[in-house]
Length: 485
Image (tube, rainbow, N blue to C red):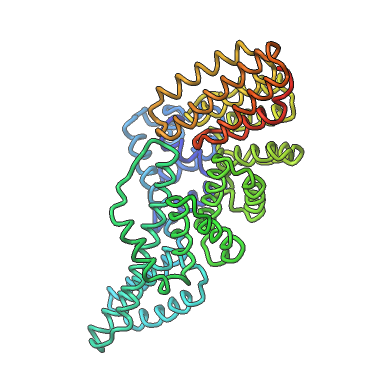
């Protein structure tokens, strides 16, 4: 029973949510089945103890004292509790939406013909909406339904010629659709750029054209402006004005965005900076680092107390690149517990290895990297690249050339990488191999010939558009590259 889905789901609840679920189960309005209440209390009492305390026969004896063991009888109570848990989740989620209770109170009053209640509560909801600076999809959805109810109520019982309420209904329905369409297209476009996926966005181009030709109708709606600029920043990367508008919103419009939309604004701003850095625009490094620090202060890098392992990695990588070692090491330790539990060790060990590498503690870096498991493509690529640089720093040419060839075959055969990603990595590996061979044979060249060879390689790297980790190659060619390997 300890391994059952029911116990697993309850175990994953926070202490506060466990207590709320217990209160929910003991509410006679939601549950009057005493054995279900007893089972939940027993699970909560034993869930953090030895697994055998939740063996089915042990639990049955505690619930049905003196009765012969009947697994079906226990299964029935577990089913009741599982259904109650599902109801609890639904009720909790319903209460989290800021307008749900008011909106459904109006709908219920209308259905029951309690028009005085509906009229009174609708005025309160209208005032609440009017005072709300956050115009997100929940806001537009609520405004649409409110005007839908008021419009048809007024038209049916009072004035059929009244049009203003219906026009507001239609306008808010349009805005709800526009926000949801743009928001989902932004996320799925980002996904298709990172992974080997594709989507048919159907009328997205028509929607963007409509917004551009009617911009005066939407330019004061921050959520629509946000997602319009995000999608355009991904579709037209060479035009920085969309990113600059997002950056302006970070400074001026955060109070007009929901927490989720605020996190999206930061996330897509990060992604734009990262894409520019990968394209060789190093000026975005410091800018991205400051964006992350600002997001940490505002609490918008974390979601429900959890930091994404990729945000964790990006922040640590930036800190190392900018030689903010003390701040980065403190960050790694401070936010380790905020990582998803199943990713915590991998993320911490990889980033610790990266920190050691940048501090030139190469043996310590290798020790940390050996603990990283290749759970997905991203960890495989990132860890292999870091191993490559570590072998390079240790001047282990044999291990380095072997790793480059193994890595090249992995990239070519991988089906989850896009064609552009594969080209970026194969270009990098091709240039990395030439760099290693130049350094390996450095003693056979004159100083002038070696410098010329490295300068030509740097020029070739610079002129090639799609090269992953271009900055490292250029640093090695132009900086320490003149030293004998």
